[in-house]
Length: 258
Image (cartoon, rainbow, N blue to C red; front, side):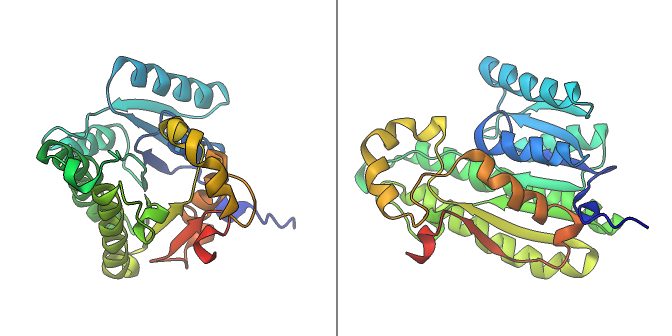
């Protein structure tokens, strides 16, 4: 008999929906889950560039022998989560939900407008709620599910110019804790993965002026890479993490303890 310590990490026969999966953190997590055998629904926001990026991720997975399909959906639209959940479920029942898509609009308190507030709420919270409503009850009916929200150190260390974004991430963490209690006895785990300072296209301009200062505060002495999130996500989305529920896991190089 050969023992396989990696067997609990394998996701053969499972379907995962990763929102915002066309690049950076979402892409890295999607590729990790696909590498473990999961069928991947690659969500993007629907623009021509995002569709092209998502198609490239799908091609990377299928070229490696996996299964994937891209789904475009603008999360600022009404009922976006309802629409996406229905489209993906028509393709395959969703076993794993990774909520990575979000927007941040850095502004001072005085600069925040209703339009910018509403956009961040729609993408970061309203659509999240709709996906919870559409996908968690079917997971419970089947007796197995994994939900992973992608948070941020902003949950507890809010940047002065990210009042709304940080607030949505704190609310999302609260929801993860709430749902972990509600669904934990039905074969579902709900956890939050909180990246620290990760080098991505979205924060490229910010890092020009803030990278050196940030690195000084990170015990491992560097910024994170999107791939740094993949291992933790695979643990929390697999059978290997079946006894991990309601956890807020920082992947931040130790910055949260500094």
